[in-house]
Length: 112
Length: 111
Image (cartoon, rainbow over all chains, first blue to last red; front, side):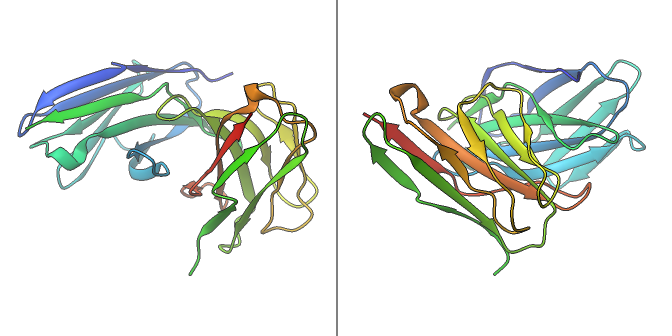
């Protein structure tokens, strides 16, 4: 079955700098890749997603890139702010499957 | 307002008790999921449902059971709670291949 590896497990950056989180997946039939942000004590919330027919997607300060050949996708956050501090999860869904497979999570800390 | 609701939000219970965690969604979603998550850690899928009268076990072995008698309702039951069941339980739902939404979670402590 699908396996998703997420790195790094923890990431600390200075406010205003960029942060990058990377995920690799194993099943080339995966076609949907969402990213969730989970703030302390809150539920995971979708922040951006990308489908396999697109290589890059942006939404203000966040962007996701997908490399289907290498089977990896990345979350990019620019001009980081303290409110970006959270745990971020990537996920992948195999075409036709009913469930998402999540990465292990990355705890991002933005230092003022 | 369309959302996913979980009750109770917090539960402290003694070993051996039977408990049911409730999950309801008002969005007409066909697929529903239960995850177990220690705070800030990995999300472990324990059960899911494609629709009414369908349930499947997830990737993490669990001593819980689920039922899906109505589209909007997906309760999770532990017949005999143990301290190892102490965790947060998150319910989620989606329609077809659309975005998956999470509920607020139930934080369970078994003494």
